Image (cartoon, rainbow, N blue to C red; front, side, top):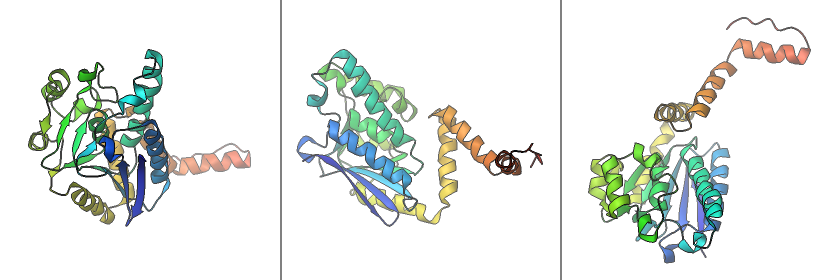
Amino acid sequence: MSGVRLNIAGGVAELRLDNPAKLNCFTVDMLAQMAGHLEVVEGRAEVRAVVLTGEGDRAFCSGADIHAWAGLSPTEFARDWVRGGHRLFDRLARLSKPTVAALNGHAFGGGLELAAACDIRVMVPGATIALPEAGVGIVPGWSGTQRLRRLMPEAMIKEMALFGRRVAADRALACGFVAEVAADARAAAHAIAGGVAGLSPRAVEIAKAMIHAGAGEDQAAMIEALGSAAIAATADKAEGVAAFRAKRKPEFPGT
């Protein structure tokens, strides 16, 4: 039975797509499970980093199960399937913990978009990435033409989306989309994730937020979150809350 497995050990949470019979393609249930797991991971202080991978050695994720969306009306397809997937991938991208995608095999369509929502990626030598949607009469719908554009050259995205070509691991590494090519991508990803253990959790979280704000990833929310964190540490905030509770006029010290 397909699903998404969550395992937490040693401060690292591993999310593993488990649908190997269909190359770990996403089903409706898997999208819902992933969303639930992300909420768990976000709320667990002991989790310092996340590794996302797929079951088996053939594919990281081959995208969305065509049977899950083929029968939807145009409205349902756009409103429920595409926007629903976007919400999930945005949630992954904006996770406060650093994330590493271990591409243990091919990453096509939604699988490539999923990898793009992680902070960095590790890839096995024989894997390829692709945007094959035009072959079934659709277009990339889960940020393949948007977030992915910030991570690799426009010409490479066009090569995949417009001409149906696959990109090999060495080229993905050369353009910076992949941080490392390793025979055991999962082990390499865990080694990278484990390096977070010696770093300040708050510094890592805030650095990620700052980088994302600069890149335009949820920029408005990031700016307000960083500003709110700064103001929450002031004496003015403490005085304002104390005055409200005491039902008196606040005397702000300006510090």
